[in-house]
Length: 289
Image (tube, rainbow, N blue to C red; front, side, top):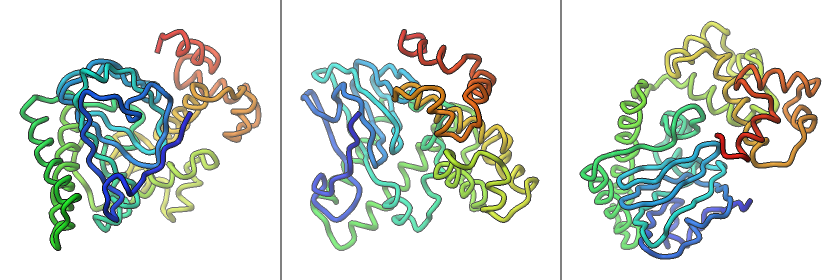
């Protein structure tokens, strides 16, 4: 697995943001190697043929589709590059949070850090073309910067991200409202940072200095699940990633995630997925997932 870091030379300006248009040409961006990155990617596919293996999802690439890849997610492209016409919007989390003066911004968007729902959208050609026009505007101001370029880029980028959040929410029937109540998003951020070591509700109520009841109300309101279910889902996802992309034994995973015994991890995983860790690993290797 190769980890790719954002390179400012991609856009030629001092911003951790870029728009890349790739059409009918060989590119490492769409190679069939296994990658992770330290940046986010939103891939707008005007023409596509192939499959994206993203975490434990196999996404069939179709014309007028949009794919969301968060930082540190594992992915591998299996595409016919000669038949590909795609535009990538790439940026780092810190850049986005600072760009909008909101340290929780990426956590407010449903398609980032998503582990339960599909990581792609199917849209109309008109919607694809609308986004591509706006991305071209961003690219133009990145390459030919003016005194007001930063403001234009910020406004277009904000529009794109919020509109995508609405589309994603409508397609998967979830609440799209961007709330100013930061408790749920701060919790989500803390879970992303600490899930290996902190897996109990009390760990997070202490960090947030709130009661279990207050936290549970916030999580239920914004994510439509209990705090317990949120933590279990996030922990299950991390165990899945280790099973799929590392050779770790079950005992090693139990040590990594602080289970006292390997059979405790196996019991937890089977309760969540219906499969033992070994069965899950084998089913993925055999193409059943």
